[in-house]
Image 1: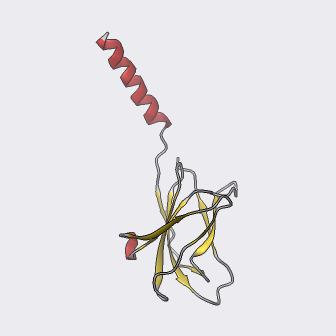
Image 2: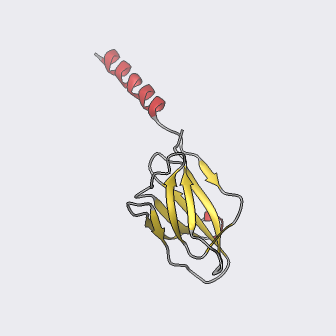
Image 3: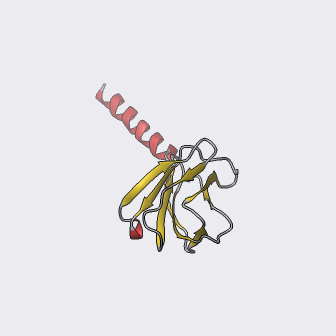
Length: 122
């Protein structure tokens, strides 16, 4: 009986490992410009809205979360700024998706809000 239980446990562990997706960290190198800490989060490749994704405003270098919100059903989000100038560090995450980090500089003359495309974890 113990051998069957051990074999079953081994099969379950192997199955879970095979089905699990490895989440990767994606860091955008370029600083994004936006008129606000607001925008749209979609799934890369499909353009589908990433409703319920977590958006975090972090301290420099993404060390600490300062504020967070979730995207609405259409993938839109908005965060209040902490401070008026400088770089803002944002992190985006959702179950089954890669984590995306980017730096944002607010420019009142920017023509658009942020557009973030999350990729499916593989």
